[in-house]
Structure formats: C-alpha cells, structure tokens
Length: 72
Image (tube, rainbow, N blue to C red; front, side, top):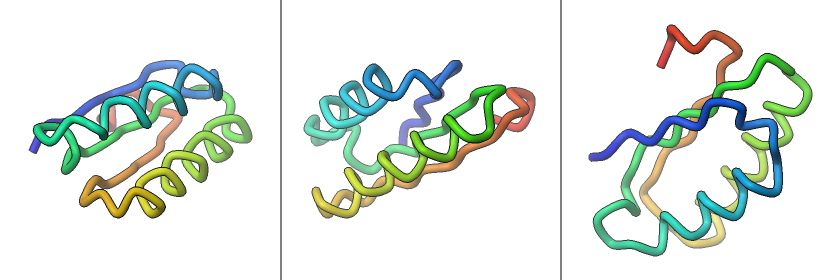
C-alpha cells in the first residue's frame, strides 16, 4: 500500500481534485492518504471531502489528517 502525504492539504480544490484523480489508478486505490495543514478547520473540511471521495468510489483507501507533519 502506498502512502501519499499532502502538506498544505487545506487547499481544498487542489487536494480534492488530486485525491480523486490518484485513486482512479488501480495501483493507488488502496493508498493511505495523509493530510497535513496548520489550519484545523480547513484540514477537517479537506479530510471530510476526501473521505467522501473514498466512500463514493468504494476505494479501499484510508484518510488521516493532522496538524503535525511529524506524525506522518
């Protein structure tokens, strides 16, 4: 399983579009998506959007979010 880390994930449009596109590749559909941003509110919004993409596409990927880049 690949791990894909987005630093500055609160940039909602960029993160959402890229996650959606990456998960369409069979090799990446079971990835761990790790989101990092210093703004908790924007980070949580991006996390929920990514979780929705995973659920709607029925992908086996996982999504995590943190404000501390050392955790990923």
